[in-house]
Image (cartoon, rainbow, N blue to C red; front, side, top):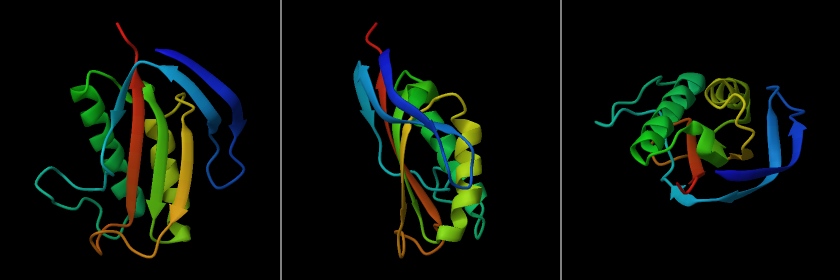
Length: 132
């Protein structure tokens, strides 16, 4: 993929990682629904544990990226929703393990609730897979 990172920067919050303020990318766009900490059958992984739920959400993102013909390296944007600001350190620790070296754009939002009371985090991902 042709990808230009515009203004990479180090986070100043809880988790140390490098993100981009913007990315210019050329290729096939992949948009997926928000991913939560569940298996395909709806079983919640990590009930009460935002880090475990974020880990499963990232595992789900990886699965859909693979099925789309790409990988996590193709992700250009994450929007992360948490139900409590105190969940952010555990959630971003999980995300940063999965997306190390990707330097995607990221937006974090604290919300009052998600679709199911057991969900503590939801992650939207957008990716661009290079034209072959």
